[in-house]
Image (cartoon, rainbow, N blue to C red):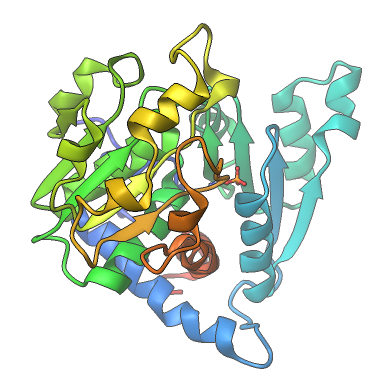
Length: 323
Ligand code: CP
């Protein structure tokens, strides 16, 4: 018997959003379409719609975040939901309370959704398996595993600037090994059907099994960038590295840093993306990060509409269908 995807309810609608893996193309397109409809909300004088009025959303960030936490909060507020930002360091978990006991207490307060970032891969799935049936969980990044809303805001940005996915050559450059963003992007880009997907980086930072996901591996930056339409740069995720993966940051920048010279190997109209935080002079030169091809801050803006879409789909489902 085929196992039900934990992210979907019995009707095949999105209940949790934990990973881009295993979701059908139409589900990803629906998220992009709904996000498009929310872009206008961010451009209104009053940036609010009443869609999730009465719902309570809890941000549970066990790891630092700038973009994801704040854009989830803004997205929830623009949908008129109530938002709680849990300060984990001052919560009762520091007095020995278990994660599940904390969650059950939040459930008892009538919360509807947990947005979870955690250093452990699988944390969001674990929570989704243990919450009450009316609660939805959104994965805001778990270990090296997945960061699905980041991937979807990246898909939104690519579609906005490049149109159809089918003709595109996309190069993801950097620390693939430790990147939850790369994994979620790879699943989304293959489902959406780009013509060529490449990962580029040193042998120490690209797991060879990634080729099973349908990507081409390059260890030379200039070859990997050749004729690319989309260049996605990743930072070195030192907080998840156990050991020495590169000789030095200077050497890494010399071999894999995106500069005006290395970017010239991609198409002239290639867009340069980065999930942030960017490390200038390590994986990307300031001239490129601030240059005409960069859409890095547009990604951040789009993140609000995409997170609104995911929250509206997941919680709108409980209100009996379309959000
Ligand atoms: N892209 C991203 O996840 O950034 P933050 O760590 O600032 O949330």
